[in-house]
Image (cartoon, rainbow, N blue to C red; front, side):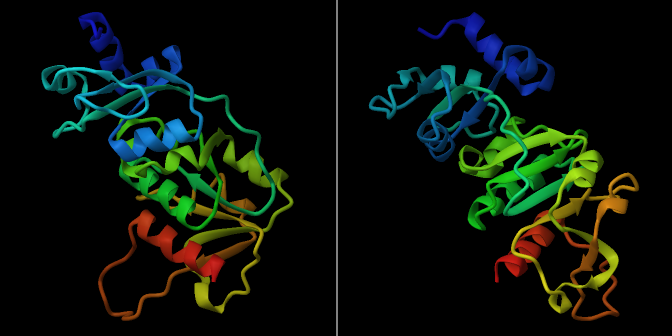
Length: 236
């Protein structure tokens, strides 16, 4: 039976400090919950407002679901999962590195893109938004169960890798003109500042996505959109 104390406990997981202290995070929606269950994430609690729910969920009322949910329109599924022990950094294959990404929606989109393009691991700078933020989890649409995010001193990690490092810069070479390595690190910078001064010295090849019309006043792309274009180029 879902108690008021449990509702209050799970509601606190909106905040990073409680996610860290409890070692728990929340996923909502059928796709998210299903993906995490199938990825063998350890389950703390599963609830559903459906009378016949999947994965052994405890049935609760729609009123209780409205108390639990972080969403404007509640999903019939609400899961609480244990934050897994972080993987080891893998210096092989194609890796995405994120430098100061602050928007939860952008991180969720990039996690989903990595899932689409077969990139199993993302290296995140320590100031990148928490991948277990409910808004990030929601935006991944289940891809968090298949892509791991590791938080690290990004400059130090890039200094130590043997992989070639590519990064997006306004003054970089046109993406289509480069001979892209199949195994590499692709660094994407923050939405407002790009790749930081601390990280940029470790980028071997600066690249950019050229505009079709140079007279167009738009000066940048959303980092999620840019990531899609860059990953498509690396996988082509």
